[in-house]
Image 1: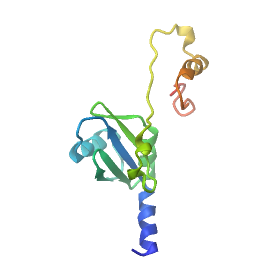
Image 2: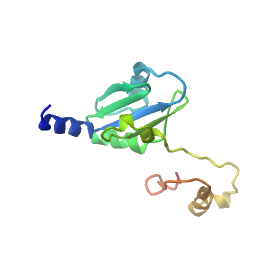
Image 3: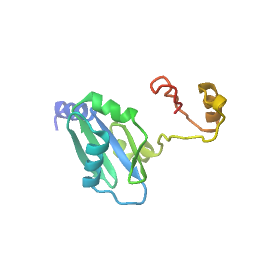
Image 4: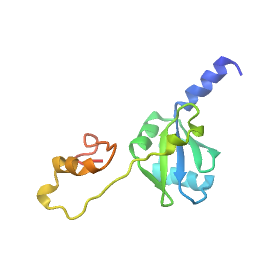
Length: 142
């Protein structure tokens, strides 16, 4: 393989994400395709390649679709976490690449006067590596 061929392949992969379904259920390509079509609802085609057990690569024709899928995390497939991350070289061999995922936490029965961003920030200190998406999602804390 020539160096230019290698660079072309890497450039193409930069327009993709890798996804792994975490769980004990077996996952098939047809189920993943259906999920992508119905849930991600991309404007342009997405090519899907099965890389390994429950591990898939999604190549996007549209940067907009790719970014929307990444911003939409966390994803759930058949009641299992579906961890998706931007493609990086050799990540399919790195189990750590899929060892963390975002989660939504919903707190019930708070008094109405506690439904503020400040109180949300105080509640979330019990979680490690909490990411604040409040700027992009009205006043939700994620």
